[in-house]
Image (cartoon, rainbow, N blue to C red; front, side):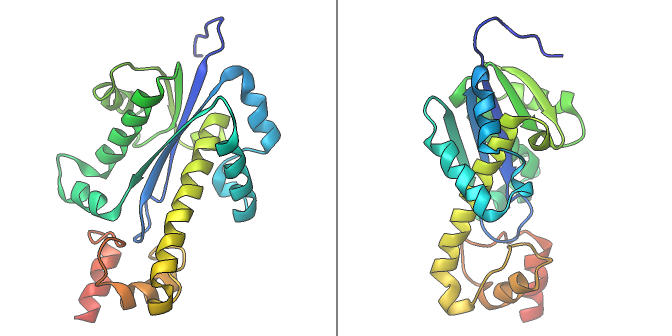
Length: 220
């Protein structure tokens, strides 16, 4: 049980969207709100972004961004930065994501942070964060935190809608030339078709992904 103070504490949720796809950026988002206003998130219908339809997710995302007295930070990690982290064993994808979460914690300076856990150990994860922040808030780091804590669910909606907007930019830029790009996941046949047509384009693919390498090898 987390100890609470008598004052209205600022609670921060952090979650990511787009860790696995071969196309487009990963987005790590932070959403912070005073504890006394958590009921406003309930009233908006905030829940894990994966449990919302695209239309509802966009509606709630717009409402969250329009709220007064909240703090939002979005770290957009483009494919080139992801590839550099994957090829650098001293960084790794987990390390890159943790560094972005730490940046959000430092910017928002909340009293408590509720984060979707990376890796198996909460203790190890918190220790990694603590090395990168100027002041560590009280931390609750759990798998599927976006299904448990409203602030983390709000962050998941912010992250997902931002990634969706970045994917839409890619669609607008390349669809006429290569067709639809699908979900961005390598299990999607539409995504694989787009990848086969557009694999030489820079800046949109995670070229360290095995799915990307398989397509490139099959085309050569």
